[in-house]
Length: 61
Image (spheres, rainbow, N blue to C red):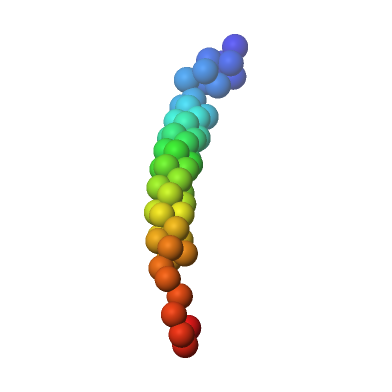
């Protein structure tokens, strides 16, 4: 019985679980930000590419 109560009172596993949850939240936020920034950068590059293509080409270029 002492082993069971000692196991229940031991908080080492709880600390590890808290760290795991914290890291999972950080990874989730990083993925969301990466997707948002990636889409914004892709949109900017598409707009810039369209502007470059619309420039008239003259000699010697």
